[in-house]
Image (tube, rainbow, N blue to C red; front, side):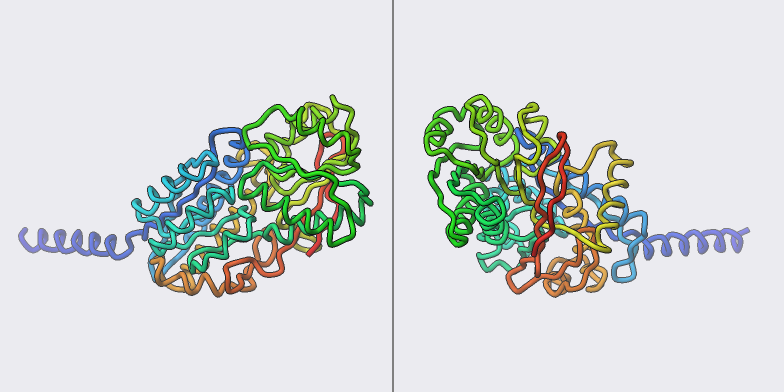
Length: 380
């Protein structure tokens, strides 16, 4: 009886030992975006991209350093506010996350980047485009989209050359993103020989633009550029219509969403709006993006707004670096992440330069027809 008992005890001990050896490696990925406030629809889009990536990684049974990794998402809301952004960043650091994907806005990503840098935690933004984000010398900071120098400058040249704008007006919302992209747009216009006839500003909570639009109307602009987000651009388009301003309306990725036609309440003319998204795929890569959008819709019953695919790629690039390094320890996989090159994502091939910027970043130009977004061109 004692022998049998010893055998049973030994077998149980062996099982427990085996279970301990094969115990999952918990990998915490932080995500921050505004999931409340005026651009919550964009923040939720980003968060769903992260959730889909985490779910797919767990379904694959990813192994890191000989252990099966179990990925967990720690999602925070920064409401697009810099102070709330740094508080959310500190909360993730205190939770000992292995890496962070976010934030959505440049205005929150830039101050948060210092918090992550001080803690040695890698941060990949899927959507922060202000050049300053990667110019602070932090080794932990990366992004998977082109910056505003590229985006704003390309739109500025397009306004002057392709749209043949003779009198171009510029408005920005004074945020790090809005002012930054508007400044680069203005440089692009002037560099292409175009003329900026007026520069006005508002804020990212404004709803009444009568005064600045009336001021610009007197200058008879044929193109109006807005540096800001779709929640402000929609009402601005409505008021342009009311004031009889029949100019082309341009903006960066912040306005280039599926929600813009609803926010403009049917006042957008076909082809009136031209916007650019930081990123873009063409040729063979287009199929992977289309497949992702179909999968996303089937899973969440909503369409991709803008950046969910970039969040998805950012999470996967981070996981791939951990696998290659054989560790989820930030200090160990960070050098591998920095050397990422040739990673095939749904948004195209991802490689980082010495600053953490994506190499050879693409832009996609869009317009709207019949209330739907329509691609014009992919440019690099």
